[in-house]
Amino acid sequence: MTATDLDAYCAAGQDRFTGELVEFLRIPSISADPAHGADVRRSAEHVLAGALEAGFTRAEIIETAGNPSVYAERMVDPSLPTALIYGHHDVQPVDPLDEWHTAPFEPAIRGGDLFARGAADDKGQVWMHLKAVEALVRARGELPLNLKLIVEGEEESGSIYFEDLVAEHLDRLRADVLVVSDTAMVGRDRPSLTTGLRGLAALEVTVSGPGADLHSGRFGGAVANPIAALAEILAGLHDPVTNRVTVPHFYDDVRELTDQERTSFAAIPLGDGEFLAMAEGAPAAVGEAGFSTLERLGARPTLEFNGIWGGYAGPGSKTIIPATAAAKITCRLVAEQDPGRIAREVARAVTDAAPPGVSVEVDTSAGGRPVVTPVDHPAVQAMARAVTRVFGTAPLFLREGGSIPPVEIFSRRLGMPAVLAGFGLPDDRIHAPNEKFSLDMYARGIRTLAHAWTEIALALARPRSTV
Ligand code: BES
Ligand code: ZN
Image 1 (spheres, rainbow, N blue to C red):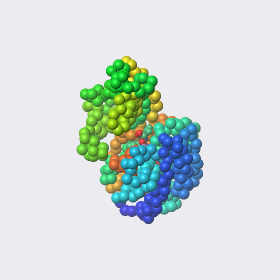
Image 2: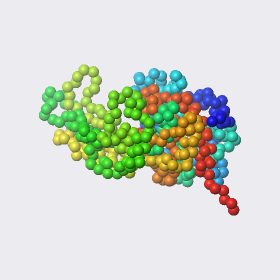
Image 3: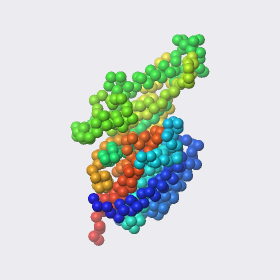
Image 4: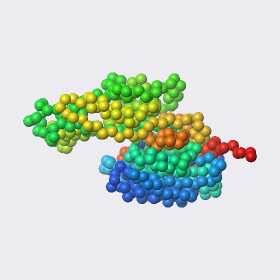
C-alpha cells in the first residue's frame, strides 16, 4: 500500500509522539492507592490538555465519587457517524518495586521498547488515539466523522463509579460505535482484533480462629489452625481431576460452545508451545478438562487465587498458630454469568466448607460482566482493513481472557457495539514489573487508527437524504 499524507505526517512526528508519551508516563496515576489521588487528577488534566492540543474542540474533567475521568469531543457534522473512544489514564500499583530494571515512572527506552508503568496499559494506547486525531486534523484539515473521547481514572480499581458516570451522561456519550485500545495483539507480525472480554467477580476470604496468635506447642493439636482451614476450603473449590470449579451453580449461566465456535477456535494458529512462551515460561498448559487453551481463555469461566497470607513468613521459624489467614479470589466470567450471583455462590460455598473450630468471613465485590462483540459489524471490518493496510496481514479475531467492564456497560446502557483494537504485545508485562510498550507498535497503532477513522466513517455513513 502506498504511503499517504497521513503516513508521512505520522513518520515525521513519531519522535515527538514518543517524547510526549514519556511525559505522560512520568505521572504516577495509581488509582488503587489513595495516596496517589492528586497524581491521578494531574494525569486527567494532562489528558485534557493533550486532547485539546490534538484537535478535540471541547474537553472537560468529569468528576466521579472516585477518580476523575476526562471527556472530549470534536463534532464535525451531525449527518456524519459518531464514534466514542474509551481508555483509562490510571495505572496498576508498581510493587514489587525492586524487580524493575529502571524506575516505573522514569520511562526508559531499551531495544525499541519504552519501559514504564502504564506504557501499554493503557496510557500508551490512549496517547496513540490522541496522535491519530492530530494526524487527521493536521494532515487532512478535518476528521471524517464525529469523535467523542472518554478516558477513565479508575479502570484498574474496577471502574466502580463508571456506570454511574455513564448513566448520568447518557446523551453526551451516545455514539454509533465504541472503539477501545486496551488489549494486545497475538504478535508483532500476527495482528489481531479482540472479539470478547471476560467478566470478573472478586472476593476476599478471612478465616479466624483464636483471638490472638497462640504458641503452637501449648495449643497445637487442640485447636483448629486457620491456615489449614483456609487451605482446605480453597483446595475444595476445584475438582483435582477435571480442574472444574466445584461451586454449585457456577456453570449455570455459561453457554456451551457451538460446533462452529469450536471450529473457529481450532483454526486460530496459536499452539500451546507459543502460548507457554508468552506465559513467562510456565511449565505446562493446565486448565478445565475438555477444552483447548484458547477456549479456556476466551470462552470458559475460572476461579483464581490472587493472594494468600497468614501467620509468620519471615526468616527462620516461629512456632505459632495464627489468629487469622486470608486469601483473595477472582473469577473470570463468560456468557450470561452475573458477577453478583457468582460472588454470592462462591461466598456460600466457602462458608459451607468451613471446618469446625474456625469462623469464615467473605467480602464480595462484583467486578463486571462479560461481553462479546459482533465480528461482522461494519465498524469491526473497517478496523480490520486499517490493520491489514498497516501490518500487511489481515488480523485474526480472538476472544481475550482479560476484562474491561466499561465495554459491557456501553453495550448494555447505550447499545453500542465495540471495536477492540489494542496494540499491546503478549510480552508487555502489563500489571507486572518492567511493563513496556513496543515503540514500533505505538507507531503502527497511531497509523492504523488514523486510517481506521476514514474506513469506519465510510462503513457507517448514512445514506444521504434525497429530499
Ligand atoms: N487492559 C486490561 C484488560 C486486558 C488485559 C485486556 C489483557 C486484554 C488483555 C485492563 O486494564 C485490566 O487490567 N482490566 C482488569 C479489570 C478488573 C480490574 C475489573 C482485569 O482484567 O483484571
Ligand atoms: Zn490493566
